[in-house]
Length: 369
Image 1 (cartoon, helix red, strand yellow):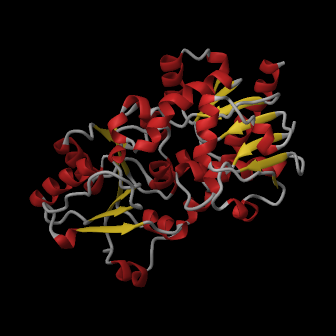
Image 2 (image 1 turned 90 degrees about the horizontal axis):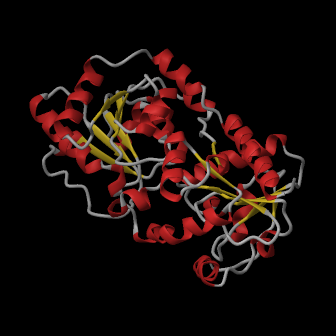
């Protein structure tokens, strides 16, 4: 099989979808015949850098075209077919929600979450286009892949997709997380980060529910002066700025976006990782924290229960008191052991994700034929 893959998420700063696409492509390339994987980018800007960010065994076949114009044409006239841009392929895998029109290829599309449908007030305006683009892609796709069973069920319920056309391909954790050391004292000093700290990781946007974390921490630090400071690591997103006025200045640090090696060290050194998101498709940050042996407090969602199992503490993150109580327990009497957390995270690998995705490709060809 010749597989075309949408590698647009690899261009520029990697988001969660970019991390997924990068690791999936690398894992597929390990076992796939050379030149039978083709990466395509649906963009005008940055297209020339694609060769530098894909594995050497992956070819790059991409014709320059502006992304917005492409999406508008796909939505209105159903052209151009993806093969015009990617070259002839047996399967085309749309890694980021939007499956273009197809000529002969079998289509596979990854739907990471349905936040645009379930919690529209928490997503950026650009994501609202998914309300039209995703159903169109689902109609074209032979197989839909999701990162979790929770999202698979949501897709089936929302769009009446038959169960034999939906396949769960759980994400993985790079083994380097389990051996990452905490940050050095000079590095922490340069960023103003103390020896002990509570940590949240995520883009500063409403879906991550960081305002609830700030409210919970403000109440917690008012009653418990010895609780570690709060560190929030993540690049600027959209929405209102976090109101930190209720927290003493020396008790909260915003690092902004960090390079991945620095982020790993920051996570490895955390006392607790808080994950209060309103909605997620998988939730890599808390699983990566478990890989570091770090205790996790997460919002009680079906997907966090599915991914984190019994290795995290769960609470209703919409309730600041419940979140504060859970954080205090995790600081003073953390759940489980570091070894058990690492063992749980080790069960999630990108090799398994690639194997499940390969199954999706085979199923897509069989359903098309």
